[in-house]
Length: 230
Image: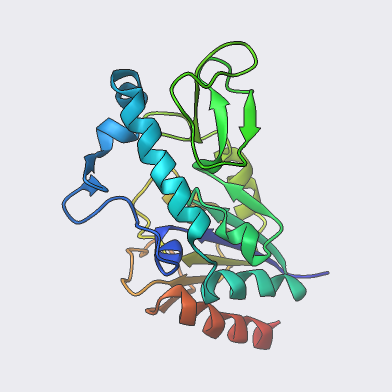
C-alpha cells in the first residue's frame, strides 16, 4: 500500500507562477481593503467592485502556468497516495496533474448563488456580471470562502490530515486559520516538511524539517528525500 502524503499549499506556490498573493505588505489586496473585496459585507456594499476584482483575478489565473512546484507535487502521485489541501482558489494544481485536491477557500472558476449555496456552476469564461442569475433568479457570486464565512471543507481536510504518513506545508505562512491548524491534525509521529523561503512558526511539533526554498526547487528536494525514505 502506498504511503499517504497530505500537502497544505498556500499563496507562495502560486506566486511563482506570477499570481499576486492578494494581500501585500501594506495589508491591501491589489490596492483594495480586504474588507471591501473579500467579505460578505463588502459584496453587499459594492457588488460591482467585488465582481470585477475577481474577474481580474480569474483572467490572471487563466493566463498563468503551473510551475515546477506544482508539477513535482503532482509527480509524487506515481509513488504515493497524495492529497492536496490548498488555500489557493486557482486551478494550477489541477492543471499540473494532481488528482485529489481539496480547495478550502473555494474555486475561482466557479460561481454560486448568493441565496442557495448548493447551486454552484463551473465557469467557462472569466467574468461574472451584475445581473447574472442562478436558476432560481438570484445574483451569482464567486464561489470563494470570504472572511467571516464558514470553511465547509475543513472537516474533510482534517480527516485527511489525521491519516497522513507525511505532511507537507508548501508556500504558506501558517497565519490564516482554520487552515493553518491542519498540521495539528497530523499524527504525532508523522514527519512534517515545511517548504518556504520564510520559515513559518511551527514549534509545537517534533519531526519538522524546514526547507527554506521556494516550492519550485524545494519540492524537488523533498520528493527525492521521500522516495529514498519509502
